[in-house]
Image (cartoon, rainbow, N blue to C red; front, side, top):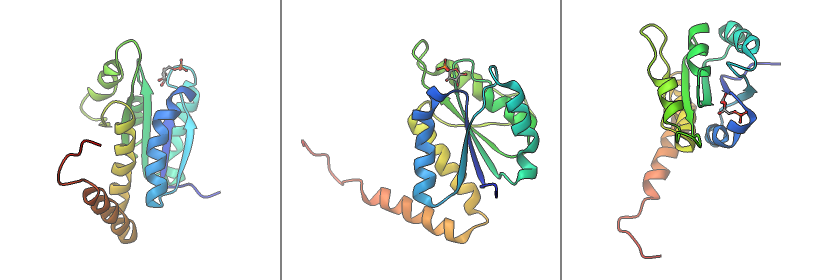
Length: 162
Ligand code: RP5
């Protein structure tokens, strides 16, 4: 089986409603991806194996979402040179600020491109991944440009009461 260019990984099944937003965007743009539950704390060996094999398998971007003590994106960035886009999942206790801080403040040497908290961040992670792949894929670049143009065109000039 061929490896798709994008891996969408998340710490828990409970992250999927958020991370699905990244998948939706990639579907819209015609970008193939795989999805995996990979928990830094509950399945550390799975994290290790995924990161260790990511580049050789041909993954080009990893989108990693987690909430709370969200160590998955940073640990994945430590394990592979494949670019990691981090999505802080919204949490009940601390509104996702815990997730954001856990993902954002990486030490020099192991970057994570950190998105906004929650669903908008996941959607933007899909767009960011597509933008990275589009650098080497003119057809995808054209689809991404068209997607962006359509979004701009959908914004009304004036507000409405409806
Ligand atoms: C994190 O803990 C996951 O990324 C998830 O956001 C959070 C809660 O997980 P569950 O208890 O819902 O499985 O590892």
